[in-house]
Length: 313
Picture 1: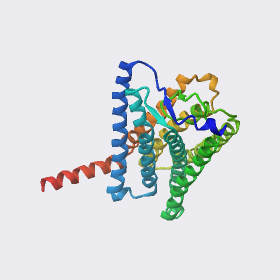
Picture 2 (picture 1 turned 180 degrees about the vertical axis):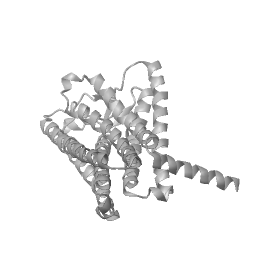
Picture 3 (picture 1 turned 30 degrees about the vertical axis):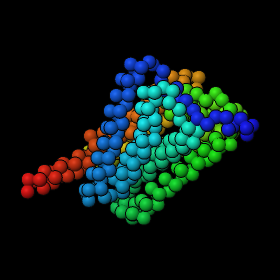
């Protein structure tokens, strides 16, 4: 078996198989999405760094979310763009394993950061008098750092379980990146343990956190309805609705991809779901937070006005 394992040194990502002209259109479209993703999340990150009024726990976690979204895009999109221009462009075994590891790590990190952000909103709205004590900078740093460390450790578990498997051919992955379930289909050994660990991780990292988020927002909704001031209710709904939209997009697509019965979603449909998960979510997140958040829009206006004023002077 060990000898067979060494036979596969690279993989071919089959991608979408739609013809050269469609691939060229997709290349231009995905390049545009990639640019918007980097610019949008980079702008959010820059605004938070430059405006001292946004140096709060909520925007501290939002800056981490922007970093995750940019990392997502940089991990999967460049290889996808290359494959659209050259269908037979191989990816090395090491490169494929690295891409799988990073995708899982960033997915776990985004999930945990969204949960932490919901806890932050819960503390801010349900316990406003104790908010600065509950969410002090030490706690915020521990929560953010812990999310990153745990995410990479869990992704490392998946990677170790993949590397123990022999790959003796075929070497064609029916996907546009090295997605873990597609890679496992090429293994020349029993992958039951891998699939059990993936399912357990999904329950732990998706279902559990989603339940926590839903409970938090149920209590947040009750607290918002008790607010006497109309302006206070509007501001609370504004900050929470942005986060809730992102939570819905992320958890909805992730649960459908990894926990829905695969017979209901053929491989081509799975690719479309992953396309939404990998391309559109990171691009939509900064739009949702900027368009529905008055503080972010206000900070952007202040930075632009300051820049214009400095040029005039």
